[in-house]
Structure formats: structure tokens, C-alpha cells
Image (cartoon, rainbow, N blue to C red; front, side, top):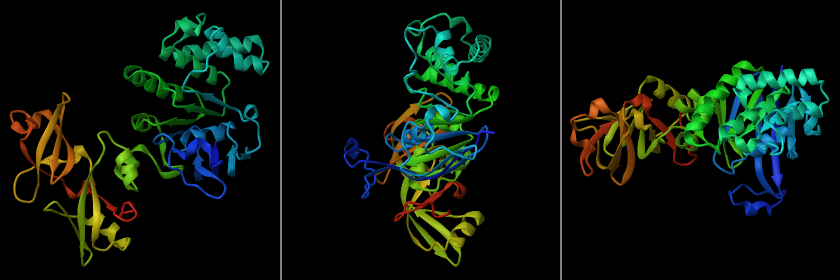
Length: 383
């Protein structure tokens, strides 16, 4: 059992901290880097903390590790309060962005190091190092020094050094950010394989939403030190709770339009640039339950949910540029001064002139893919 519980966790730095370049909230205590963070992490769960630079994700991870003092709140590992427990006594391991390998040691010596510190027997150390090397595919590099390894191989060694201890919790702080795109893809697959072979709880920090979506059982989206939404990758993609989450999750990002939501006897219609979309039963029920009234809204629609259309009830636009992506085309268009991206399958667009700059394109979208956000709070009106 390796559960982690964070209750009302808070981190405050002095007001002079980094001149508060990330526009974090300031209180009488200082700069609020993490505010009221609450999360229950289950045994063997893979949790990803994701958000832009300065959002508090790495600070939160370092508080779990014991490398940052917790200003307020409580941290439990397996129901044991950890606030004042030294990092070495928390039974955790951490993998850093810059590998942090000892350059004068071989791969084997780097991986042995934490076990030697624990004064484990040589037979036990050899067994654990060989097992970890086999899992990570680095057995042939055990006698090399880090300078003879590629970036991906160094990161495997760093992960190997972390897992030989069989920690209750494995913390990973942007471990793939120093790798090129191809290696990042390979290492994501390696990490997915790894979590199936070792029994531990993962807490993984990244600014890359693709990593978050592919690795996490659940993802925690943060902004300015505050949790914006917690859910499975599918949940946060399908049901973003606010404008920030909607724009952050998804590549290319969601399109946003100024619109008007109209309510008539419990029936809702949204108007966007002259097009009217009558909302279906489920959306009507959620909006009615929340007491939503007629108002100006921000309408969000993902690029892959937009369809080329004809007729009167459409949005008219002009193509700025098009990107051929193989199986699909990304059309960058402008409609009434607002930019949009439309993803169209290549077989749908073949033989049509809509890829040409300056071409006129009409488009629409079905009601079920529409997301409605309050102009005032930026929250999703359905939740």
C-alpha cells in the first residue's frame, strides 16, 4: 500500500521571491506559490501534475519529497503524517530533469549508490541493479560512464537508480524535457511499460499536456498555484471545467468564439456569428439545473469537431494558411476577425480548393461538441 494524501497544502515564499514574475497571489505572509492543494492518490496510481511554468507543480512535488518546507496543510504517505519527516525517511525516490548522475561513476555504480547508502548486502545490491537494468534495457551499459551515454540512456539510468530502492512513491520532475521529440515519444512508452512492472505510486510533473494525457491515470491541472481541475485524461478533455483547462488541454487548442446564450422556457440556443445552434436534452438539463439565464458567453469548440458545411446556418470564414499533416489538413481561417483552426480529413478535402489562401470556407458544428463558458467567471456553465 502506497497512498499519498495532500490536505490543504500551501506554500508561501517571501514577497521578494523571484520578484513574483509569474503573477502569483500575494498575501500578508508572502507570495502564494501553492494554495489549498487537496488530492488523494491511490496505491499504484499514476498522477500527473501539469500546467505552465510557474504554476506550482514542481513546488508541490518538492514538498512531497521533503525538499521544500510545507507552509500549511498536511501531507500523509500511507496515513503517516510527513510534514516534519526528513526526505531520507519518507521512502521515496526522485528522478530529476537533468539526470543528476555522478560523472565519475559507472552506470552500475550510480545505480548501486542508494542501496550502498542503506548498507544493503552485496548480493542484494547486485540482484536489484541487474533487475532494474533488465527492465530498462540498459544491461549492456552497466560498465560505461554517463559521458558515453545518450540523453535517453542517461535518463534510463536515473530511473534505474530511483527504482532499485523499491520506493513507496516515485517522483518524476519533467524527466523528458531535455530529450528531443523522438526520444520523448520513446521514453513515454518506456515509462508506461515500467509502471506495469514495478509496484509503486507515481507522481509525475510536466508542462507538456501530451505527456499528461498519455501517462496519467488522473491529471491535476494547475495555474498560478491553484488546482483548476482533477480528472482522467478523457474527463478533462471532454468536460473542461473552465476556460483555462479548455485552452490548455488539446492540440491544437480549442477554438473560442464570442456568442450569446438564449434561454426560452428551459430550452437553450446559442448564437455564434450569425449561426444558431439548438442545444440538446443533456445540455439543456445541466444548464437548467444550474439556473443559467440568457447571457453573453465564450463558446469553445475543438478543431477536430468542426465540419465543413453549406447553407445559411453556417459561419463564413476565409482561409489564411493550410497545413498538410498527411492524413488530415489543418485550416487556419478567420471569421469576423476571430481566428479558428479546422481539422479536416484529407479524403474529405481532396479535390477541393479550400486549402488555397483566400478561399472562402463555411463551417458549423453539432450541439454536443459545444462548450459554454461564463464571460464573468470563465467557468463552464454546465458544471
